[in-house]
Length: 238
Length: 238
Image (cartoon, rainbow over all chains, first blue to last red; front, side, top):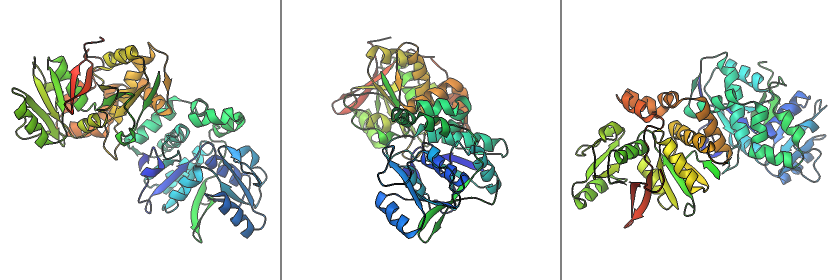
């Protein structure tokens, strides 16, 4: 298995035959994993607030969640704090976030699309091991800003994957793995630019939660349905 | 002092008021440091082979060196192996290399331009400490390929700078420092994509030399003279 980790989403291309793991550790992909583990049937990541409200009208009982600038959107049922996503049995979630949704949408044509995070690192690693195909990790970041927590998140998953498979690392994947091996998730998330911003907004508990390695067993996988990306819990491998 | 490390040269912009350290550890900036330490008066980095020959005609006694695809250019006096650059007292060197020259040229408008490498990491760190200004490290890489050895090279310099100044690291600089703190130059250069390519071309000794931390005391600094970038040994700080 060849493993690559990108620094920025804009470097992603020709994904049709590839396994892509999208990470937005703070907080979209952590929230997606949490919602599915809390029983949600599916999560629709959408880019715009308008699209979120429009889709909610079409799906009776759907809950709409998300943030802009870290803050819950007015009129939404939920924010982007994973701690809000509890007891969602059978629910459809529509999630609009700043960067995670964009990266997921960018990777939606991948052969296999997985939403990765630190909280489900081991489950994702096991899933990748069973797929046994080359993998590209895609930190969400923003167009011009590197996302330390997503880059390290890839490293924690790679570290767990390396325990079960022979893997070949690109130079970028090597850096990501070394970062993960020498720094705890708490350390990385707390010092990251984005982590600092969330802590300053009052989301210290979110940051701690997002750093909880291997807390959940869920593997969120994406597929395109009627032209729209939808993420569900994989029932294939656990 | 705020410290940033870029992943790719194309992210560099607005350098007029900035201190920029360009790295092409394998091998252009190592070769430049070696040539200056061996007594060369100045090094002109040029992009094209044609430009190299044209400049040689204008400077009596100048030596022209460089590579394409790792191999010495036919008709050049020297290759890009730093080990060839010995006993150059008073000589002018014209150096054309694939990526290092492009990155140096891209940064030529910087307030202060320094050619950094592992071999002179401590001298560069001391120089930066005396300048006492924010610093951007610029790995040469290629447009679409990350340069592990240059990214780590920045980390070794930052590690030495941190011993003498209070510094503030961007998330990218943090990753670079952590990489350098947990991996030796030999380890990094030997495993890097570019290092492997040079070893396969028979340049194992070059790779070992380029990994020799703090062997030289020279600080190559750039200035634009008659529209052309020229690199000389700094006589200001040692």
